[in-house]
Length: 144
Image (cartoon, rainbow, N blue to C red; front, side, top):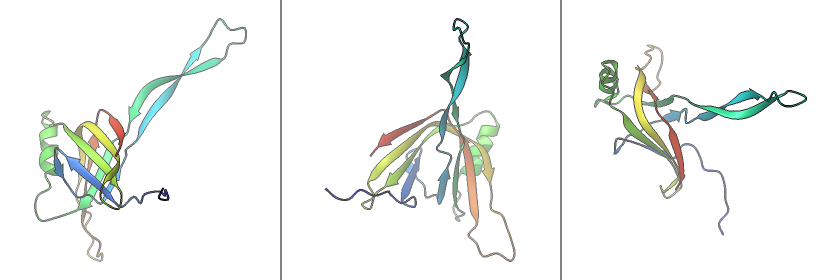
């Protein structure tokens, strides 16, 4: 059996609406369950009982270098401002050396809530980066 080792974070793929789009960074694949306190009044020593409460979802941020052809972020965002948000499913896959997905995060019903253009600096030589922050209705984790 080959040795098992952690996979590097730089080898990933993003698909959105069926299209593969190159991003340099994906953050916010976070889900959380908030604990709710319940007080049991029938106990001789009342103490709170902790129960699972509401789920909390973080927004996901996608970043990429600006390219000449339009990325569609601003068009997608403008449509969302008019209460006509096109919801898209997003698939983020962590890949192994042979480009086979090992872990896949499926993001359901995503829509943009923030679009940010590059930061310009005359003395800089960094790549121009644009980003889109999206809200969603849940993340489903799957093994390759």
